[in-house]
Structures are given as structure tokens and as C-alpha cells.
Length: 358
Image 1 (cartoon, rainbow, N blue to C red):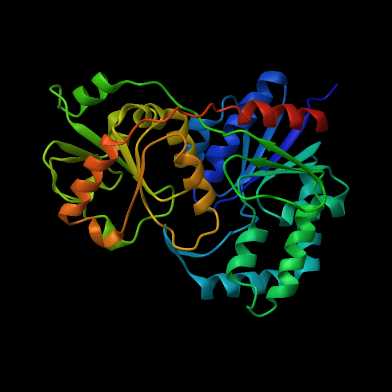
Image 2: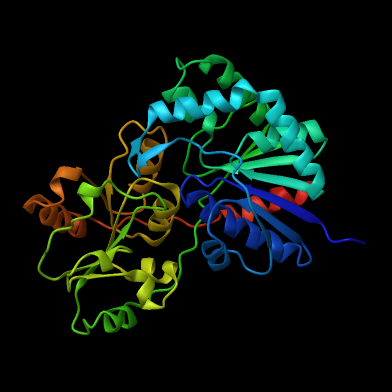
């Protein structure tokens, strides 16, 4: 009997969709060791190989763009409107072309996180499909672009595409998904890593200790004005752009030869935007988190509301990064009570649901 074949379409809007999907694939493969896996995405192979256990075929293909971003915390509305209009002016042709591509791959099931074009194409091709995510582009488009050219028609086509899936696995925390099909809510999806703090401090040449803060923009860069982090006595920064600065208090995490999840489990705080992956991992570690608001991004409120129940949280404005208030905000963060961390149950729960369709 041929091995079951799962095709996974992963959004390239940042890295959160990939890091959210990988633990589910690992849990599913534990149930189906012979599962053949094909991943279609624009996310770098290196990140996927770090997160996905076992072999997989990679197809570099972007079936969605989410929203055009000026930075990790700034949406480019004009560019987003143009790109949605271009896709949906030729929507039937786009669906047909995607359906032909799906047929050429020949999977037994499509899993999408969370592009809607493959879902619409799967229905056209007669292929069962399931959506998995903490958000969906119907909510994002409907929030930002309802009055854009063709916006109302585009919104209906997006919603119809999500409704065509056999099920929508709604990940906690996140936005509600209600499209009239089967909706299943699962717990947080996160890899928590293991604490290796003494080793981390030794590699930073700080054996006597220091506060270590990880800067994690999540796959889309922060605005340029934000990256000039202040010097604070006793604080060491881990930032992937550290080589751009001539500073002894700043180091590149990629130079530590340590898995990202172990670094996250070993630091004192993380500075980030409110994106699913880092928020979920912080909540499951009880890790203090300092965040730069994404303004009116719809997913931000449910993510932060959930995180406050599981970890210390503080917001900071971009203009405060180079002032004394930044150090004060960190001190406040570290003095806050430590709630009970969340349990990362979502991957196992989602794998059980997917197993029904395989």
C-alpha cells in the first residue's frame, strides 16, 4: 500500500505559520511513521529543517501573502489592496491554476496554514482539505480593506474558500473562525525547549551572570528606528543583526550554536511583536515578554489577553526604546508576579483531528 501523502501549504507571512505547523506535523508523524510529507512555502528550508522532524519534500511556492508589511509592526495598506485586487480580478483562473497544480502533486490531504487559495482549489480538484491557524485572512482583510476596490467581492471569495475546507482547526490563542464548516479549537502550539542558562552565559562570556534579552521580530524586520537598542548595565542583547553594531553587549543568537527554542527557554525576557509563535512559546514557558504594539492588528488583543494569564507582559512604544523608560519597563517586567505557564497541548490535539482525514 502506498504511503499516505500530506501536502502542507504554509503561509510565508513571517515565520509564525511555519513554527505553528511544524509541531503538528511531528505529532502526526508519530502516529503515522510512514507519512510522506510535501511542504509548499516560501519559508527558508533551514528554519523548516530545524522544526520539522524527519524527511520532507520542499516546493518553493507562495499561495498567499497575507498583508504587505512595511515592517514587523506596520501594515502597508495601499500595497495590500493592490495585491488583493490583482489576485481576485482573475479569481476563477487563479483557482483553476492552483487546482491543476494540486492535481499534479496528487496528495491524499491538503493542510493549509492558512492560505485560502489552495483550499478553494482543493474543492475544485475534489481533494479533501483542512485549515489550521490562530488567524485567517478573512478577518484581517475584512478589518483593513473592506472598502478597497473590489473589497466586498474579495471578502466573500475569501470566506467561501475557508468554508470549503472539511474543517478549520482553530489554534489557541487566536481569532475565532466561523465559516459554517467543522470548527475545532485546540490548545496552544509551542515547542518549549530546555533551559541551558549556565551554558548560554558561558558562551556569552558572562559566567558571573547577566540579564539576557532576546530580540525576536519574527521573520519580518522591525522599523529601522527601533533596532538601536539602549545600553543598560547588566543587560545583554541577543539580536540576529548584532554584527551590524560594534557593541560588546549585543550578540547574534545564530553564533551561539544552540537551538532557538533552547535560547528562548534560557533568557530572562524577549522583546518582540505580538505574533503567535513567540507569544505561545513565552506563555508555555512563563517567560517575561516586552512587546511593541502592532496597532490595530486584529490578532494582537486575543494574543496578549491570553499571554497575561500565563506570563509577565509589558507594552513599550518604539520611541521609548532609547530612553530611561526602557530600563524601567524591564525592571517592572521582572518584578511582576509569575502566573502558571500554559500547557502546549495543541499539536497533539490537532494531529488527532488530522488523523481522521488521513
